[in-house]
Image 1 (cartoon, rainbow, N blue to C red):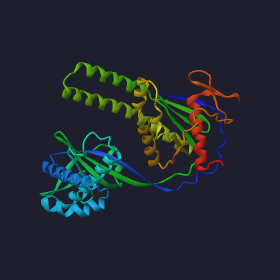
Image 2: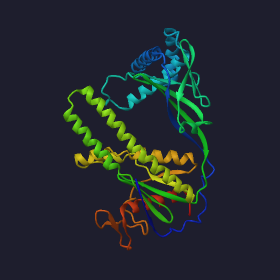
Image 3: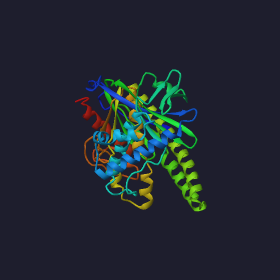
Image 4: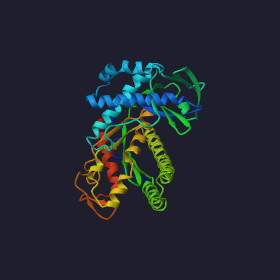
Length: 384
């Protein structure tokens, strides 16, 4: 990842009043993954899977969408059928079944299977089923034979969650290993801000506009994604066995994700550091339906669909909120075409440059980040 910064003139808002949302509390939620030492009773996964699938069948046949109704109609029946299992496993199974049914209904007939099925070894846990001691790193888990204590592996990263509130968790078994995914939350007060950073997320770079300069982070995500796409194509043509091919695919998929996420975290950390240094909020585009407009060649469509822009935005957002930096999403319409100086429509000068009748000539990524910043200032009421 390389860093390129370009100095431009100030936009005259360095002495603007503070952001009106400064001091507001927000709740930051993060999920941490722990590897569990030792074996968890396989009967828990087996019975839980049977309960969830029975509840799903019942909910689909009766058209039930409410957790409250499903629990009232099936909770005591499931408890009687599985008396050895702690009762809260049935309670969370009702929640799990409702989530699966609602996801199935949102597909609106596009699902391949007739109805959803739980096939993985995954158990939803609530506060009554587990306790994680983050001083001794001990997991206390409710089982049919009583509570058992298991040690969890941890790193320096996990230590930052001391003092955070623990929510629901997932107990997941993959092969011979068991993992605990815990949801943590913490209340954070947003900082008062006097400026806004406009963050333009692109396929190969992230461009940031502040009051005095532009900063461009070269992510090279396109090259990483394309390289692994070509590797998968070569593997598909050489390995005929479906099971062996899937194993190799999983290995390269993990490597690709690790490389991309490493870049995302570095970029997000640098952007948040710049926001803290300049006392700024962060503005990004709301790209929710951007893929609906992807109607190009087959190769270009595939390349753009491999670009995980939303994941990068989420990484920037959660790192910013951890530090109390406000984040706002703005309408992306016209950000790459409208002149940030006079408001006129800019024309393409060459592949990268845009020009306006007012005399402004600038790279299109810089124009985009500048316009995002202006919209962020307006949305937060800074300098108005």
